[in-house]
Image (cartoon, rainbow over all chains, first blue to last red; front, side, top):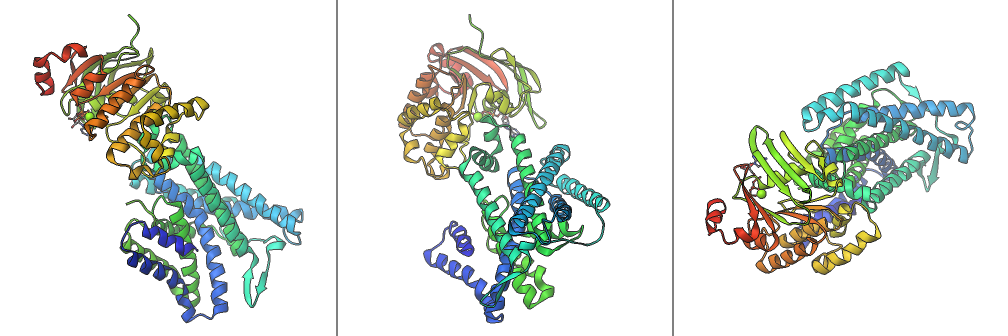
Length: 339
Length: 236
Ligand SMILES: Nc1ncnc2c1ncn2[C@@H]1O[C@H](COP(=O)(O)OP(=O)(O)OP(=O)(O)O)[C@@H](O)[C@H]1O
Ligand SMILES: [Mg+2]
């Protein structure tokens, strides 16, 4: 389904029907290629894992792409929101464990625990986003170099603070009981939390699309991506919109971090930077500024990472950079980027 | 006589290091449509952009309805009841025609939607392409959208920069009719090279040259003043 939408994006650039059909078949077909050397059961497991990973990368990438598209800001502090979200979730799960909502919890309590973690991450990430935008990012509008230096500096500081508040070492994250283990569907082992990740990713995608396509705020943001001056002269304070989008993007990254920590069952301070690399690849593949593009890019990266990691583990990240390079050769602005 | 709705006194504007406006003095009376004239590069567009706060004045005073606005941000000026139609068909291509209008609506009240009905009568194409992306409209239709969009709010003042650019003569006539229609509610300030259009809308006029106000008067007089037209506008 996702690859179909990907080709729909490619079709928009025109070309003959014949060429479109070719591109369509190629872009759907390529995801079945691993079946040549991976047995179907393993393939199914890897696909679910890849989709789940893609959804979680999307959480970080969606904010990053909007911040770039609207504000023209390269935000390298995005990974810091992610890792802070992860640690906030980790601490909250430890606290909830005391009241029996994690290990040995029932279904309702488990869901409640995860939702509380997501909410806490959302709030902490959002607040960090507002403060960072108002204090630092605001000073860097118009200069990518300043943005890179300042957001990278902010990121380093935030991670150092995190090491002081928590610890510089790996920590094990407890998974609420109802999401532990896996289902076995005809020999295909599906880890429960992967399904949760896919659901959360789809809900967030749906939410973003709803706001962007159906609300006045969405119209203002999309208009701002295209032409800030017009939006200003129509009576909107674009700076306020900037702060709002930065806050929302940071909150989503933090939610992504919490989800990732439960997904991986462990956390470490460098996980923000690692995730940022994936998110940047995804944003470039999808086209800077396009949420749908990021979604497609994230799915591609998630799937490719898992197929390649199974086949040739050392090449997993390299394969994603390859995909990025190939897509940029075919379409320099990314899958859904503006011309 | 009544207070001017908008006045500029000794306004200077720099764009980067270039000294573009070098002492612009203008005043606009409520209810009297005024045309800004002058040859290419005279500073007409910059004057409107300076009023909007897009290229802020470096010195001088801009007074809107008795309020000093020279230090205000564009959105603040807009909120004081000023509509702005820029020179370059500034419609949002990736938004539908409907979304372009909704973006322009400062409130989506019943009166606003009632005004939409009038707009559809003036610009039937807007209804026809209501759900299409504005990017697919023709140049003339984009221009109409940019102007019609400015009609959805009950502005006190409307700044329109060269609406006739690239439009067929029949469309220009149509546009003149539309602008004259809103002139009854809104004070219109029009930058226009097309003298036919300028003379059919303007009551007062100002001529700018090299970033300065060089002449002003009644449009009815300018129509017969071939010397002045020759000197500053290059038309006889
Ligand atoms: N961004 C800019 N950078 C440098 N110079 C500029 C810029 N914008 C305008 N100018 C200069 O300012 C002067 C006035 O420009 P402006 O657009 O106000 O003229 P205009 O009277 O509207 O002309 P036209 O009738 O051609 O639209 C011109 O000489 C132009 O070259
Ligand atoms: Mg001009």
